[in-house]
Length: 417
Image 1: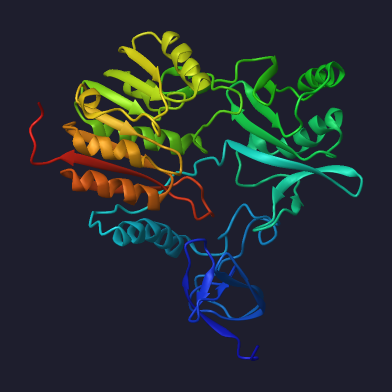
Image 2: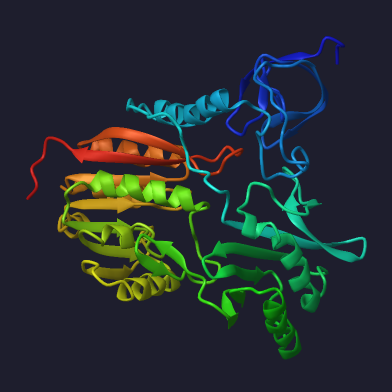
């Protein structure tokens, strides 16, 4: 490699600096001249480690986390806020453009709040002792950490909790994944990877839950002990999610997404919430309108139902267990509603979007954690006569390439039957 180094032209979709020849350099920024190590190709992408920044960008800032650069959790702590926000909004703009969609994209909204309220810590035995942390980027190597500074303060002790819980389960000899969630009742912890535990190990775990002052402790989704309800408020509703169940990463992110969903459906009186999960949107929507929640996970629906029954003054909340990937709601079923909300996993909702395109629902609000699959699904709705009024990107996963978004679709050219 020449002593003059190479020039970085742009940021890639994963936060790597990209040179003119397509070489990806993690940690490098546009406009910089850098020296790199030998290039390696993996899955069609050539990458090289950053050896030195020879001419830094004026947008370079000092990372705040001591683990940045080794831990694979954050990709881009070294970029100043304004260009960072432009890059992240640009991920959405690019995804829509590649799908041939011309729609207004709002400025990126910061949804980080107090930090991540949930995280999964990996536990492995290293040099004879259990260590907890995150995986290095593109690696199975564990980066042991003391605490993660982008999490809420109650989660700062989570690595210590994970190490302690590993002791009755072999001390990290078998890889464990420990999901910790900060709730109103305290830490809610679900341990996975060990398989069934004998009576002695289970008793030890229950005792540790008391010593560690956990709200709830579960093993592979089975509750071992609940000392306090791990409540996660959803609007006025006291939601207790199923062990290890899905939640939005930050409290502020969930609240901002819900506000956009409620505003998007407008004056609709009957709303279908598809891929509803445990009801983060349904329970808030039900404060002012009737809601039908559809979800494939029975535990999530049970949690939604309990929260709805425990909240006085909500409108009717009905629910249906259904695999929307295999059995999406059909047009006649959809046309019973004044608005539809869908919030699928990262894979998107292609089958359901195709059926929505055949329906006459006046308003559809799409929530997504993947701009590419959202653009694909949006294309189906647009081909069916909808107009994408606006897309709002939210930065819930700060310092990562992940971006949340909400898009509001309005029916054009066809009257409601």
